[in-house]
Image (cartoon, rainbow, N blue to C red; front, side, top):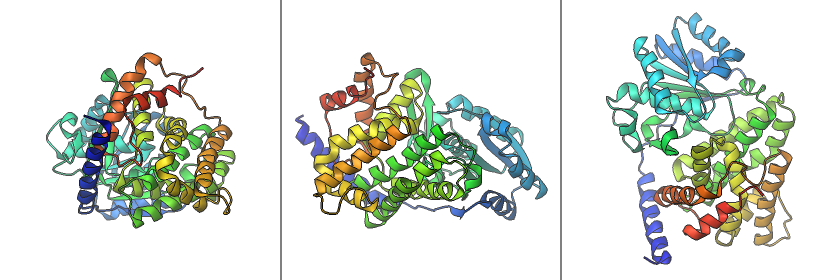
Length: 403
């Protein structure tokens, strides 16, 4: 089939998805914001009447003592807290099952996720596993979490994924080099806390990578052909907040105002992508993670300028609007000049944060398989501004080979 005909088919499919998206039952979580909001969320959990909570996190956060005040607050409220700290980056089915086993052993009636996107994703699937009598593999895909999940509360400790307001969670299959999405509106948490105090100790490199993840969400949501006036407002504000605050948060991790603004940016961008999806940046970055365990935010940061440069002919007006929202470029410039200034600012941010333009781990022999997987993902669900065929995608990924 000629590629032009395929593009028409993709666009028709995206139109159908946009219509479906308008009637999806999004039940957004209650969101608490500001320093100290994590402990306030504990009060909400107690007020909801929960008695046994599974706290899902990673080993590093547990060792740092970051979750100790949260555990103490819940215990003081009479809630039995069971800790599961076995989550690792790109959580696997085995990690999900281990957490589910702990939940069953202690008969937990709610789940609290404290950590980055991996911890929140793992907690979502554990909570869904508890309510659905089927293995994780049978929940992979769209709208297969039939019976919902246990009440889930989320405290993100990074400002990037926006997982506290997304309807998806990703589980990794290392043997097949795949990341498998579980997507359902029933995966939205009950409540979440955006607390900058929990983010002040985050290393600069992780702050930068997760912040670029938030920026990617904002940009791809704004460029999506599914976008609406509502998601446009969310994406523009998320981009503006990120451009304004991420350099400060990276340079001065103790700056609570910058940290809180980044938490807000991540949250708004998460709301946007939940409603309109992402694009090629994520499709390629997901596969860099699957093949090489590249941290997701870092992969997005590396890929984004390459994809935006390719997409620019079809979305220069939208990129120019992002530039103006972020006070980038000159008002006298043409929209194409403003669009290029926006892409260049992203490259400059990457350089400032020591994020390379290429991926050291990328192997020439893997490019064809990565291309096939990325195109399969993107052409199934993403309303991108400019589609690419296999040779174009291979060429673009090839630009990221380390020289």
